[in-house]
Length: 136
Ligand code: ZN
Picture 1 (cartoon, rainbow, N blue to C red):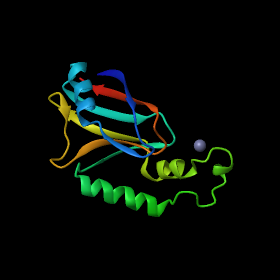
Picture 2: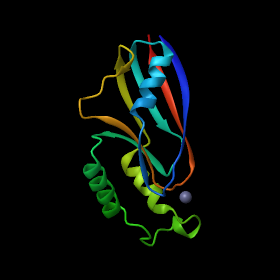
Picture 3: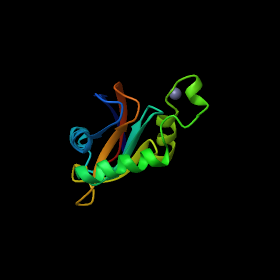
Picture 4: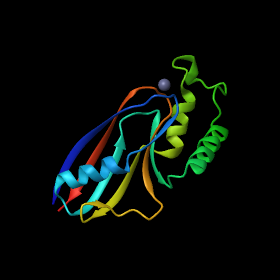
């Protein structure tokens, strides 16, 4: 078994932005030369998230509305006293910062309607996502 790492660098343009990184992850797997294993997609930032779901614009808009209802902006958070981005951190807690996906024949074994997304919740910023490919 081999373990390979690639850093995916993204530059977001809005405070809240969803980026489909499926093709970036599959490109890293193809470059690795590994055929079968697991890939972990890990955001190195505490105000962002990684998730898997369907890339349909209405659904993604619904998702952002839901997250906004669950964790409203400026809800008297203690962290806002020092950094003014508590909503971003709390949303990150709820969603999570990484996903692990099986791959086979050089690409992720995702469901037909599944894509891998990076979600920035405190942009615009330069962001780094660690892609760790474990397999043979
Ligand atoms: Zn903060």
